[in-house]
Each structure stands twice: as C-alpha cells, then as structure tokens.
Image 1 (cartoon, rainbow, N blue to C red):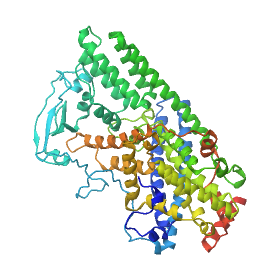
Image 2: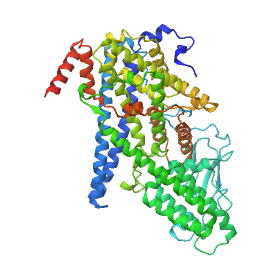
Image 3: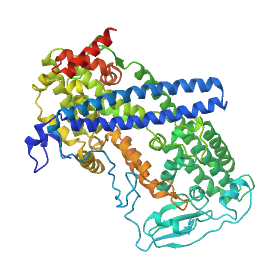
Image 4: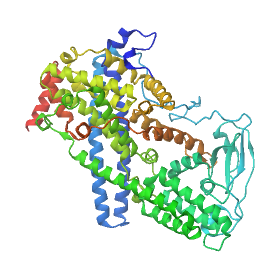
Length: 627
C-alpha cells in the first residue's frame, strides 16, 4: 500500500494537489456522507418510536415497560437529532464556502457518493442507484428450476407441515431462456419446495418456505455455511428470528419425529447437525438471542437433543456458555457507552479538560495506535445483522411489534464515535489562544492521520481530516499559513470524496490485499471509512428488489449483502497488536468536546471575524451565550 509520504500518483502535478488543501467542495461532500447516514439512522429510530407508540395506544404491553422504552428511544432520537443538526450546519457551511469560492469548483459534475462494490450497472433506467443485480455467472442458455437437491422431500408441503394439514407438494421443472432475473415473470410461480439455480449450482431465488426448509439439517444433510450465513443475515427482512427458529423446530419435529421413538441410528446422526446449526447461529448472530422468545425455542431444542443423545451435552453447554459471555459483554459495553455519551459535550472552554493531547501522548504514532484500539473494539461489537436491521422498512406483510425492533445501537454508536473524534480534533485546536500552540496541535493531528493511514485505520483518518476541515478550523487562515500543508494535502487526496471516493476505494483494496497475505499482525488491520460502508450497504439494500415478479425472494441480493458483510466480519475480528494505554484511550473517548456553537465562538476568539457574515455570526453567538 502506498504511504502518504510517497506523494501523489504518477502523472499528477504535485502543485495541483497542494493548490486547495482545504477546498470546501471536497469537505462538503465528506460531511454530506456523514449527514446522509445520520439522517437514515434518525429515520430508523423514529420508526421504532412509531411502533412503540402504536403498541402503547393499543395496550399491547405493560405501561411501565413501554414508558421506560419510550424514554430510551426519545433519548436516542434527541442524541442522533443533535448529531444530525450539527452535521447539517457544517454541511451548509461548506456548501456556502463552495459558493463563495466558486473558482475552486471542478467541472460541475455531481460528486454524489454512489455505491461501487463490484456490481455491474444495467443500462435499463430505474429510479434506484443499483438497478438489477447482475451476476457474472449468468448462463447464456438461461436458468434452471429444480426442487431441493439435498433436503429430503416430505409427503406434505411446507405450509401443511406448519399448519398440520395435508396436501402434496407440487414441484415444477422449467427452463427459462432469459438471462436476467426480471425475465422470470414469464414462468409460473412454483408451489412449495422450489428453488431456482443457475448453471454451476448457484442459488438465485426461491420461496421463503423453500429457503427455510433448505436450512434445516437432516441425518444426511447439513446446509452450506455460506448459504446459512446469507439466509440468516437477510431473512429477517421477511421473517422474525423467533418465528424462523420456531419454524425450524416445527420442521425438525415433523421430519425427524423427535417426540416419537424414532430409530436411534438416524437420530444419532441428526442431533449433532441440529446442535451445529444452533452453534453457528449463536456464534454469528448472538444478538438474536436477546429475545426471550428465541431463547425459549433454544431451550426446547437443546433439551430434546440432550434427551435423545446425551453425548452432545458438552457441545450444548459450550454453545450456551459462549452465548452468555457474548451477551454479558454486550451489556457491559452498552453501559460504558451510556456513561461516555452522558459526559461528552461542553458549552464553553471553561468546561474542557486542562490536559493537552500532545502532552498526554507525545508520539503521534502512539496516538494512532490507541485510536486503532478504540476502532477495533467498537467494531467488534457491531453485529452483522445490524446493517440489515438499521434501515429495514416495515414489511406490510409481516406484523412488527416493538419486541421485534432492533435493540442494539452499536452501529449508531460507531457512527457517533466518528463525529466525536472530528469534534475532539477541532476542540483540541480551538482551545489554544496562542497561534504557535494551535500550529503545533494541527501538525500533531496531521501526523497522527498519516500514521492512521499507514496502519490501515481509515475511519480515524477520515475523522481527523473531517475535524480539520470543519469551518471553525478551516477559517483560521493565519494559523494554517504556518502549517506545512504538503502531508495534509496528500492525505486529503487519498480520501478525496470526488468520483465516489475512487482514491479511497483503491487504497482500501490495496490494504485488503496487504491484509490477506500478511504474516505480521500489524499488516492485517483494515478499518474502513464506516459511514461510506454503511451507505454502500444501504443502497444495495434499497436499490435491489427483495422479491422478483414471480413472488420469489431475490437471493442474489442476499449473496451480495453477505459478501460485503463477510468482509466487514473479517476486518472486525483482527486483534489489535499494539500496546494499550488506558489513560490515552479514556481521554479520547470521554474528555468533553465543544459543542458546535462553542467551537464557533472559540474560533472567532482565536482569529477575529474577517467579513460581514462572520461578524454577524459572532455577534449572534455571543448574544445567545449571554442571554
């Protein structure tokens, strides 16, 4: 991976790279990504509140429980709303900077960030960013429809198994000559137990019932792990986890006759498969098991398994113990976040810590390492399902209760951490009245950003760049005139938002290649610019249809979501190899940072307003402070 000290890419004039090191156009787009993701999170929290209020009005649950839940949601909404308002104000400030500095603008082409994650764009016009997911593996002679190849057929259809009724399952085999999934509407909707494959055995679609049955193990069959992950990740768009596990229980009972005196030989092969399914589910999606309804099914299944085959008792005990440890760790982490968030903002310089980051941690490389500790720890608590749940709209065909809504806020807290780090950088600069000290702090953060780049910590790198691009910092012209801008300009070039962050995406690929072949733990670290990752996944989810015209679930979309989230899981599982400094980590996460207005006032006191707009702004802020 190219180090930032290596300079701009070949063929590019270095003078051009350094000409506008803090151009408002680029920083506007950077804040635009944060603003958009925060807006989406705010919308999701408001959807939760609507569901809760609807239940409360209908008397669906205890008033005490609902009242407490409402207070928690209102607090979350207020917190995210404040972040949104701050980002929107910064975005507007950068947009105004673009208008005032129109000579720095480019060709006029839109720099709107669109997902570029390896999917082919279709020429067909659609009101979404993605259009149809196209696969490189689409066969020229069409797709084939076939019944389940591995799960034994029951004499009853799936619906009959769940409802206790009779009826045979019809299976139709047809050929479809179309090369795209849209052409499948020419084929009649299959009955139960049908999945659609392409040549090579690639599953592309199927009914929900068939997909559920495909994940149920038997004595001679266990579902492919890639399929299991993809289905458990995205099935929650159509079916709640507790309902899904309940259907798995029903299918196991019906197919294996767990309550009867079934042949011990057959059940002896089936029970380890069922325990393995539970183990993989609890390991990959442990937060599903915070729902007592899910745990009720787990207790029922595990008791039956141990009764049938006592030899699996150790495996059952191990998976339940591991699950308990994960959920306990999550509770402690949530308590920590709640405490940190309650003590993080300051309305004036008097409320700030007297500790200076340059004195607490003398070496910028060491600070970058401590930032990496924080990033990897916070990443480790984000469940893969949170990417799907955070922005999932209510499915009109699936009844949603407040119990079914996303309870964890690890994803939201991680986005909030980015915003906090940006404000910490700006606060550390503006709290110094002397220009010489501000220059020293700026150079320190720029060097820290460079070290983050070399480590592969792109989220902290982008947060530092965002902090130094905030309007209270970028307006300090006298201070910036004393800061050597070459290193910072090269970093900005690497993280340039233009062309859908093409420079960053290329650098991220290089970091991934380095990580894949690394023998040194330090080279395995890849921490992506998280808000851009979230935005990519959001548009993949929104831009591709969940269902095909024939009523089948679009499993190609599930594969694509799983592919992106699997990369994320690989990144978050890396153990930080650097020595931990608790004092520095506590300072970075818990020291107060100035609010938006306090930052603006501090900036004006560092360097007085130099135009009418700034003078009016300063006058208004002082009046509000004294009122």
